[in-house]
Amino acid sequence: MACTVNKKIILASGSPRRKELLESLGWSFDVIVSNIDEELLAGEAPPDMVKRLAIEKARAVAVNFPDAYVIGSDTSVVIEKKVLGKPENKKESIEMLKLLNGRTHYVYSGVALCFGDNVFSDFDSTEVTFRYLNEEALFAYVESGEGLDKAGSYAIQGLGSLLVESIRGCYFNVVGLPLYSLSCLFEKAGISLADQWRMRS
Image (cartoon, rainbow, N blue to C red; front, side, top):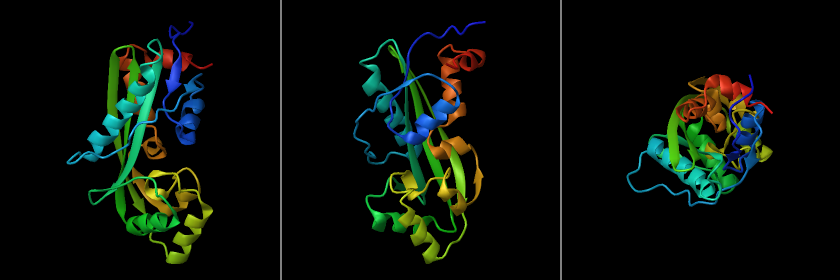
């Protein structure tokens, strides 16, 4: 049976990790980056923040493509109510890693699906525990440059996997796009799981 989905899919993110995750599903999609202000509002809880930003990213692109399914996502690392975004430099990167070192933190990712006037959204959270590392190891990871463009200054799917002792929850959420949550949003939009499998290009 042919897939009933004939609308364009757009990923409203320039993240190579999110692009790779969607590509792993075999879906055909375009990437159009939405340039919104990713600011934490006063008193806003991290789950609310990532969900709001995911919606804003998707809407910023969807307004120009009303006939497409537009996917937005946002990820933050949180420890002791402190939100860690992307480090601005190596100094901030090592400070983040020292804060996470040998401790447990949470990764929140918001995901949104827009088409026309319809918006579906959700968020996921994953508990991540870092092993304890000495300063030489932490500085060596920073020098690799891998974590400089990532929330919390590490990449669980790369060299940063060796920082991680354990996770509890969705692995893809830590990478930056909770695929289960996204699949559920497509179902809410009327695209069954069977049709999602048929969306392979």
